[in-house]
Image (cartoon, rainbow, N blue to C red; front, side, top):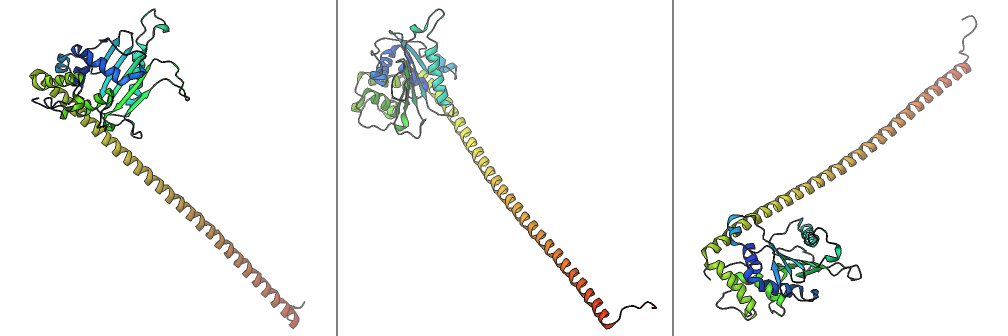
Length: 313
């Protein structure tokens, strides 16, 4: 190939799984990821928003997820998300609900609802505390009992995927999306030697060698780089704000402690002042008592000496 092409760039991702000519790849991918969670394998699929090269050339905000319905009326959404953010989990749940909810048309009742499956390939860790790269969320209670077998949400974290020995078709697809940019179409490794993987590589080759397609790829790369830069800057600013807020809270707590210590010291000083005042008052009272006693002694002494005043004096 003339240029290395990353299959996780949204326009390439959608061309691989969302183009009409690659509908067999979408069928293979769905069966590989959903596996036994499907009561019956996918055999036919209608892509509801097929890839259109012109969309990506003219509109940076064009829809990049893939929506499809199979011949059993089951609904599917597949999306690549390279940057995670605080509201992503809520968005994932909301879009699955939207996919499930929009099946009903006017006049239809709940019995017509069919399973809806939402599959997300993630470029950054969304669940950092969990080492597993696959997460399958279904409607079950705390004992594992299924409420209704009507699909679910599937999260695939590419950063955590480190399998070297490909055993399953799911692993083959994940390894392709993670390592595809570094593959040489003329010297593919053994795990890529399947009809589906060679067809997927031909899609990468088309982006690499066709000027118009490569222009679309480059434009999307630039747009995604810009979005990632903005998101990282936002995260950095958010972290700085949180650190500043934490420092201010720590300083405020220290000031409160200092204020409490000063108040305690002031109270102690006030107690000491009151004690000294009491001691001074006691001394004054004692002095007055002594002076009164001395005066009484002098009076009595005078009486004993006969120095008391007479009637004529």
